[in-house]
Image (cartoon, rainbow, N blue to C red; front, side):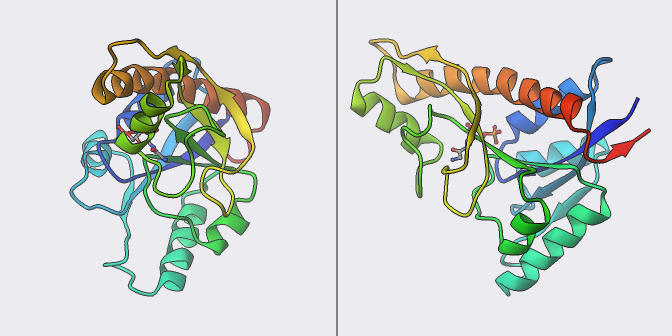
Length: 202
Ligand code: GAR
């Protein structure tokens, strides 16, 4: 059975990477994690990937001070690992034009709110859930969408809803949304892998 080769870009803890990797080890999985790229060498995501035996690359403004070189190095690493789908999961940097062009239509992101609500520059992590609570929304939940040049502006692929409860704090809401992310992201990647195996290993 051919499997879609997925590269995950992550900056922080990497719980979505863990969920995706766990799902990739299930018998029915049509995808595998081919590469993890992180911009923070001590992040939970890179540590997890190293321990799990997944190829990793650390690249950032420190390893590549010139943004064009960083963009090209990332594009080359993704191509070299036979990447069919790029997933940004808690990756806090914008992708460069070369990566976006090379993987046009094959880069997806997970965002912890129901886009187009509560997205855009500066809207990540805690700030997103604070905005949901401040707006008095009755529901929230993750969105998986295509990555384009603008933050959180690409077409929505899938969303799942969770309730916002009257006594919610940022932490309690974040935890509920994150649990939903861990179900939604592997499900979306599995569907993409099933329908369009853009690159394959055996
Ligand atoms: C996730 O909640 C993800 O949706 C969010 O960062 C967290 C990363 O968690 N992304 C954004 O806010 C992007 N705008 P993780 O490192 O445990 O996967």
